[in-house]
Every structure is written in C-alpha cells, then in structure tokens.
Amino acid sequence: MGASQEESTGPDLAQGVPLSDLKEGEMLSGQVQGEPVLLVRRGDSIFAVSATCTHYGGPLAEGLVVGETVRCPWHHACFSLRTGEAVRAPALRSLPRWRVEVRGEYAYVTDRLEEVGTPVRAKVEGEPSSIVIVGAGAAGDAAADMLRREGYEGSITLIGADPAAPYDRPNLSKDYLAGTAPEEWIPLRDPDYYVKQGITFFPNVRVTAVDTEARSVVTDDGRTFGYDRLLLATGSEPVRLPLRGSDLPHVYTLRSLADSRAIIARAQTTRRAVVLGASFIGLEVAASLRSRGLDVHVVAPDPHPMARVFGSDLGRFIQRLHESHGVVFHLEQTATLITGDAVTLVSGEVLSADLVVVGVGVRPRLELAQSAGLQIDDGVVTDVYLETSVPGIFAADDIASWPDPHTGRRIRVEHWVVAQRQGQTAARNMLGRREPFEAVPFFWSQHYDVPINYVGHGAGWDRIDVTGDVEGRDCLVAFRKGGRTLAVASIYRDRESLQAELALERNDEATLQTLIPATNEYQSA
Image 1 (tube, rainbow, N blue to C red):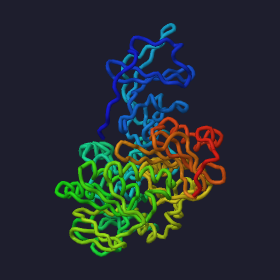
Image 2: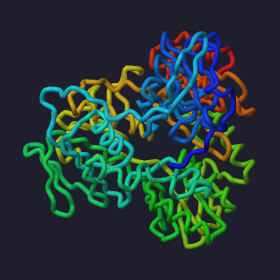
Image 3: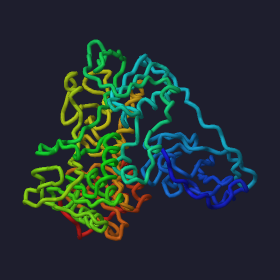
Image 4: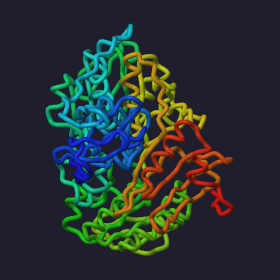
C-alpha cells in the first residue's frame, strides 16, 4: 500500500532532548537522519518510533497515546510504542523503532532497531493442528496474518472466491476509482507474503459446503479440506435492483477489484453517469466519477443523502458538498427502467446515461453458514469470542452478529476496519486465547477533500448534538439515545474522534458529554 510521507520536521533527536521537555504521555515529534520520529515518555521508559502510520501515512504526532500504544488520527490504527507492532487494524505493518539512551538530563535517539520478530507465546492446550479460513477479504487476511504473528506453526488454508489476492477494498470507491491512487497501492501484501508465511492460499475458489461432522469443507473444484478450526468470513454481495435493464453491459455494482476496474474502463469512454442510491458507496462513486470529469446524477428515495445514518443536517451538508462539485441529485425518486443510453425515473423524467452504477447497499453472504446448520439471526450468531453455535467454527466480518458490550445488544456491522479487527480476534480465539471482541466500530468515508470519521454504532438514535461548525467542515456530531452516546461522527476533528473512541470503549459518558455537550438546540430522529 502506498502512503504519503510526513515531512521530516522538528528537532534532530539524535542531538539530544532535555528530559524536562518529555512530559508523561505526551508526544514530541522530531527527526533522525531525515526520518520523522516520535518520542514518547511512559513512566521510566522513553520510546522512539516512526511518526508516520504504516497504513496511509497518517501523522501519529496528531494522534493519541493510550497506555503504551499510539493511535493514528486518520483511521485509528494502533501501534505498540515498546515494540512498534501494529496491534490493531487497519495497519498491517509494524512501525520502525530507534534506540533511546539517557545521558544525564538528556535523551538521545541513536541507532535504528531491527524489526521485532514473531513473538514466542506459550501454546494453549488443545491448540489446533489445522485451520481453514473461508473468505480472503479483510477478516480472512487479518486472521491468517495474526495466526502467524501469534506464533502458530500449524497448517493455514486461506480460500477466496475472488481471483485477486487480498486487496484494499475501501480504496476501490475512493482514490483508486478517482484515479489518484495507483494500482500498486491496492494489494494488501507483497506477492510472496503468503508463501513466506506458510499460508496455503487458493484464490478464485469457492467453498460450496461445510461438513460439521467430518470437520471439512468442499470447494467448487471438487477438493476437500479438513480443519480443526474453521473461520467463515464470506462477506457481503451488492444488492441488485429488480429493474428492467439492470443486466445491460453498462450497468455496474461495485464490490470487487474487477468491478472497480470495469467502471474505470467504462468511465474513460463515456461522459454521462447515473448512480442509483445515495449510500456511502454510491456517493463515493459519484465523487470519484466527478473527479474523472463525468457528468454525474444521483437518484435516491430519501429526502437527504444518508440521513438515516447521519441525520438531516449532516445529510444536507453532504448533499451540498456534492452539488458544489457538480453532482445533480434526484431525491425522493427511484428508477423504473434502464436502457442503453438512459435511466427513466418514477416521475417520468429521463436521465441520459452511458454508465450506471447501482449502490443501494449490500447483503451478507449467509448461504454457506445456513446450509451448515449454524444459528442465524440477521447474521451468523456468535458469542463474545466470535465462535458460532457449532464449536470450532468462528465467524467474522459482515456476516457476524455478536453481543456488543457497548450497546448491550447483538449487532452486525459492515465496516472494513471492524472486519479486520474481528479477524484478528477470531485468530487468537481459534488458538484458545479466549479474548472477547470488544472493539468499538469505526469507519471512514471520503467525499472529495472532506473525510468523515465515525466511531460507535448509532442505530436507533433519538437525538443529535453538534459541537463546531458542520458547514465549516469542523465538527463533532454525537448520536444519542436516552441521554447516552451511541456514536460520534467527525469532520477534521481527528484527535477528538480518537478521544471519543476511547471514551466509548470505556463507557465514559462524562468525557463524551464534555466533548459534545448536550444543548437545547438538537435534532430529533
């Protein structure tokens, strides 16, 4: 994955920093031989790590120190200050580290340290000899990686229906589709990663059945793979409209790398696009196609884009943002017909269209779990350890329905970072670690130069409170129910977003009310 590099500024840490300048838990950003380095003091220890996140190159100095970790302000990756390890997604690679020497009243950053190798962890009784992972998306890839990082030496088989190796799915509707991210950024790993890690990877292979008695899976090419532990991470598929003309060759959905490539190819020879649906994917597609110079019309049944998630005020802001870039909305409308060069709306209006993208949401792929006899309730029902109703079978990503300790109810979330974090937790639990999945959901959405971060799970909110200026692109938005904060959205308030995430993790309502006070001017659901 490519990443922007933070400019190397600040003091030369190799020349020494007064200990009095290193306040407990605060960060001091500087450089060593031109590389940006972060210095952090925790108790008697002083840590020096790269100041640039290994995910998208976010500036860690603008993030948040929590214990002996630092969290990235952009997409909430988390790293160990002591080892540099990427302890929480979306980061996949560790941070470089430097040695720190204290001489008198100064701390000096000296030589760069070797990357920490795979930790040696004691085996748990009953640790499996073979693990099969069905689904090579965010969760499946993260699980396979974490198994090796946990020191697991047994067999790992990763089976993916996609012909491509695991890739950065969020980028498909954002920079990659817009033409500002090159294709070499898209793969999550180096081509030889899976071979080096001893992970047997089968792309373009679909699992058709799970035999829970024989503890094996069967694939569409006739092979059978036995397992001691099984992770189902089959993800979602786009919802397809039952609409005349939806099967025409210029009509697309966007879920896979192949989908994004096909839309890009079509966009290079057309000028008029219609996006059906004002979902996150739909609007990101609209922004990306506008960046490519296409005329873009968006058709959606709602009065404001994404109002059911964000409320009408933030929804109206998003609409105006897109309109300022030339997008034309047709709201409270649906399509009735697609032809080779047009889309007809229920109102009778006809929109010219050489390219149509359907972005009306996704549905979880539950068929495999259902046929295996796993308990289903909206998704695949799991316990707090992400284990399903059949012992030894775990579930993660869009299909998993788990008991969320922060809302007190069972939820299912279709977010990339959640899928990665669930894959990591499921991996540890397949090894018997018994680690509850307690991560607060996080996602980000990009609209031109405006990023929107969202932490928590705000379904069912009855009140919205705002701090800052939505129109000025500088705000925190709290979604609350019964006086309790469920989720927080932010625009260019990255550090406060991290603080809100931490407060949600700790069920610290006092801090959330301080960050976004409840006012008399609020918006009801």
